[in-house]
Image (tube, rainbow, N blue to C red; front, top):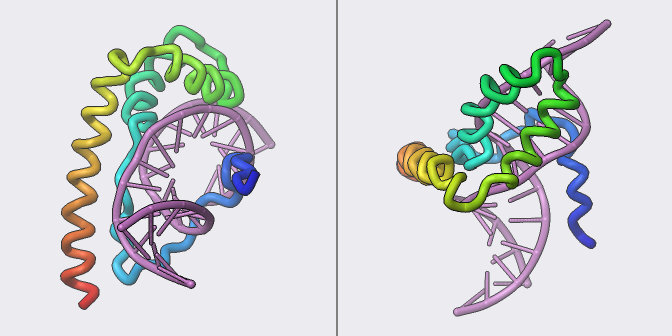
Length: 93
DNA sequence: AGACTGATTGTTTAG
DNA sequence: CTAAACAATCAGTCT
């Protein structure tokens, strides 16, 4: 319990940080970037409900080795965030 | 020192 | 434009 992950409702969460160092993306975001055109290409007509869900299933359908390229991207993006964060703590003060 | 949460990230599609 | 499924995240906060 203490985690009703019903997919956080209400997107566009407000920012609590002064300059809001927009965190980093997640492996899924990179994976989705590649699948969005792939999945949708193989499933012409599939709506958000279908592709969106199918995407997640396939996402894990891959193995850590397959999501490696996405993970690498994720960590790369993390570094990106690192920069903002750096400026964040520097600017905030 | 360790544990927790919340906030956020991006995609898809539809009215 | 926004919302919700889908997944990861991980940074800052708190006692």
